[in-house]
Image (cartoon, rainbow, N blue to C red; front, side):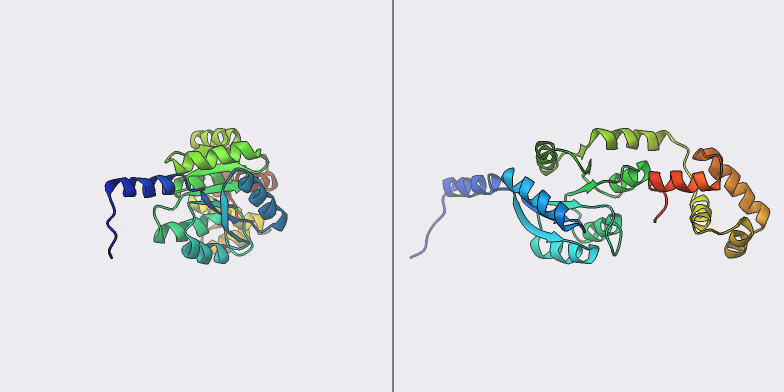
Length: 223
């Protein structure tokens, strides 16, 4: 005996799906952070469908569980959270990803949002604020902590380093002299001196060491 579904039955099914608890996946390499977040979100009546400690685990588990929201750390042991997000979005363009990180570098926040993140929250926020941000993203919006929003506006207004300038700065951070950098990049030493002068002016910084420190704080360099 076949069962026919009426429009009323379909409405009830849709309502149950609509009211179902949000399914969350957490990616962070610190066990205490993962456990703490799981407890906070469960008290917010959300379901934790998976936890991962590395980027590789995150990509594999996302494909397996397809969570409603992915909470992703920026820095992971095997690859950056940005790379993880790009790989996930390449397969699932509709994925909703929120970065939850201790990093407040303006370049890091800009990279996250410009590459498709639905939100960027700074670790240390209270559970209610985290839950509110997750629900806002699930509803189609975005969430930025006040600190992240301010840093993002600063980044947009700041003078940008070129790809070559970042490359030079990365080599400076590894202890290379101007002469060594010139040899590695197949240019003259005078060209490197010109790049360094522009870098100091754009950051701004008083010397090479301060330039590296500022760049790391802003998230311009991978460390």
